[in-house]
Amino acid sequence: MSRAVCPGSFDPVTNGHLDVIERTAGLFDEVVVAVGHNMAKNALFTPEERHAMLEEVCADLPNVAVSLFRGLLVEFCTERGIEVIVKGLRSAADFDYELQMAQMNRQLRGVDTVFLPTAPQWSYVSSSLVREVAGLDGDVAAFLPPVVAERTRGRVAERKGSQSP
Ligand code: PNS
Image (tube, rainbow, N blue to C red; front, side):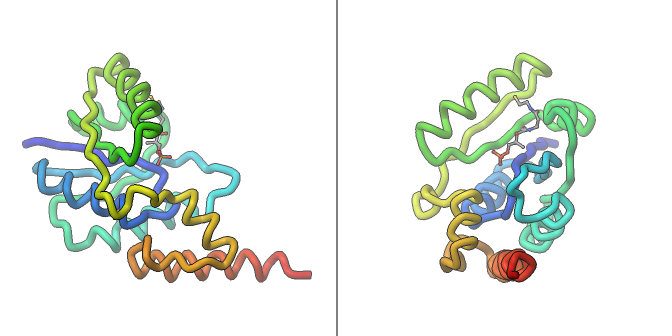
């Protein structure tokens, strides 16, 4: 039984993430999408909200489960018998950052990382850019699964509402 993890912040999950998750589900028997619990100051969604959205958008992938994790990713992998971390790579900048993490994770616990090149149509899409565009009232529908786009619009509107004088 081959097991892989697709870890990330997923704030929010994008079409690029989903593409990597779907392709990973085709390569491994079981896939866990692991949502990091670290709360960045500018987070749009709580870890629980990100988890819930991922469960919805992965519902039609029978070998994919979604889980929250805290602490080291390699400890999460070791506890669950997961041998491989899968990461999408959009660019050389991603590679420089991801290579260092991959080497550290292998050194810490012998967990290897496999890189999947992001589908070209999503190579410029990131959660942070989506948050920025949505926060400035841009249309992010093309980059997100429909349910995520709707909740992103709702969350941005809520935040703006609570800031008005
Ligand atoms: O979507 P992101 O923000 O690139 O996800 C990064 C994430 C959550 C996968 C990464 O920060 C991570 O693995 N965090 C867990 C803590 C950890 O194991 N740190 C050591 C990495 S070598």
